[in-house]
Image (cartoon, rainbow, N blue to C red):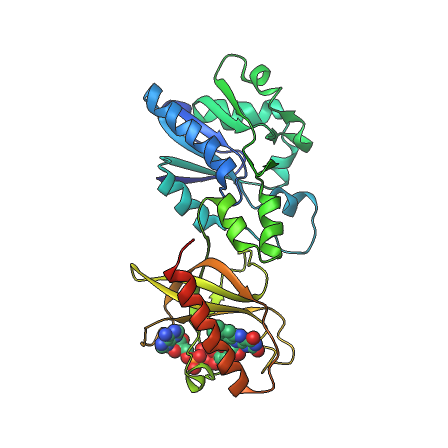
Amino acid sequence: MRTIELTYPHTLILEELPETVAAIGFFDGIHKGHQHVIKTAIKEAKQRKMESAVITFYPHPSVVLRKDKQQVKYITPLREKQEVLQRLGVERLYIITFNSELAALEPQGFIDHFIKGLHIKHLVAGFDFSYGHKGSGNVDTITEHADGAFIFTKVDKVECDGEKISSTRIRKLLASGEIEKANALLGRPLLVDGFVVKGAQRGKQMGYPTANMQTNQDALLPKPGIYAVKIFYKQEKYEGMASLGFNPTFEANLAEPILEVHIFDYNHELYGEELLVEFHSFIREELKFPGMQQLKEQIANDEKQIRRFFSNPS
Ligand SMILES: Cc1cc2nc3c(=O)[nH]c(=O)nc-3n(C[C@H](O)[C@H](O)[C@H](O)COP(=O)(O)O)c2cc1C
Ligand SMILES: Nc1ncnc2c1ncn2[C@@H]1O[C@H](COP(=O)(O)OP(=O)(O)O)[C@@H](O)[C@H]1O
């Protein structure tokens, strides 16, 4: 997959670009609804012997439009998004910088510059896609703005349990610790990546070394607690347990939750290494114990429960 970052106005030359079928959207999470839109574009591209593409934006429009100081967190930060799209078989990824110039562009100008101007012959979007200044262009105006230059396909909403699958719904599930349900809507387990940094060195003392992770600032983390996780490290996959939280037994006031993972049946140094952590099941909330011994007993119980969870997938 070829990734091309574009800032308005781009300088790509139409004649040098392949005829393309593109799916367009913000696609945070690339959940099953998004996947349906993207797979529709890939299928159409194959049939028409054109290149398949995804057109997306970064950062999230709310960063520019609401100007709120709070950082936007993503279910799929840019890198994860790229990896998931690559796995889906997308050939070309356009990432359009969402800035105030882009936000000011009228719908017709947006279509002319970023759809016709990128040699898109067929555009696919979800039913609620909007574009142009104040989102005033929508799926009912695209065909008019296309003016015969490309075909448009609207993809209807995908539901699960009678409710629309959406990034907002997945965010709520993650915030309440309903990881299995969130994973079902994502169509794959939530993945968080990070580098191993030094902690307080208590883990080894307890018999449960925990790799403390420095995660991407952009990444949305689930509700704090103890989780059954799988860890990818150097092409290998391991089972383990994660603690995401504030370590109330030892720490008085951590500002941000820390993600720590104990890898089962593993015993090597990991400092400085990159780990990918897949969240599979929420086990319990973190608790404040009277001391290290009581916490250690609880962690031994967590281990039993998590090993059981992985050996009986239901
Ligand atoms: C499975 C598991 C469960 C944990 N549960 C708790 C908990 O309930 N309360 C708590 O204060 N810390 C909990 N922790 C975090 C430990 O306090 C932390 O891993 C330990 O202090 C080691 O920290 P260090 O890596 O900075 O040395 C848990 C850790 C693991 C791996
Ligand atoms: N099975 C394992 N799971 C996690 N980390 C391990 C494991 N075995 C060895 N380690 C190493 O031990 C470190 C964690 O030990 P710990 O005493 O908790 O130190 P720290 O407080 O620096 O995290 C990890 O960063 C890693 O280098």
